[in-house]
Length: 196
Image: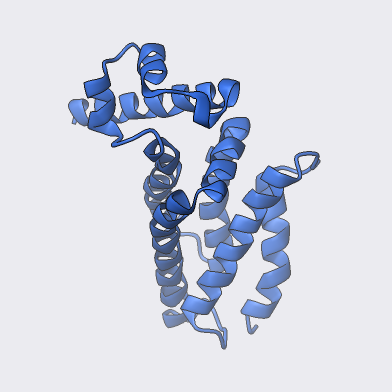
């Protein structure tokens, strides 16, 4: 267990140091050698964690899926499905906003790369499936009365979530936090989701 924690910590360190370098020099200009030097590790160690430099950017999605699982467990007893969804996704957004400048960089690089966008779609699909499961359970238990299928609701919520991230990335002068912006937008669409 301790070994796994150390491995995860090192992967996170490589990720954050690489993002810092990308921010300073630009993604294309940074080499694996520079990343390993900054982290104090060898290239072999780097390649144990990331197959290539581009895969560092995908770690954001992977780490968000891990956090999603933890957050779903933490909020599993929240009664109202809207509050449960908001709490879970706000945990993810809080993680995103902790390193906001670096996360903006990751988002922009993923948007520029067809390969990275395709790879990141697996994380998006996982997020969608987890939310659809939560929503389906809420409908089955009578906590949510909606004419919409869980998959449709999940797609809508995921759309709001990523709109919040993209707005933050593209419109940097916003005065509201990511979580506040998401909660406001979720309020708007929830009126169309909840049949009560």
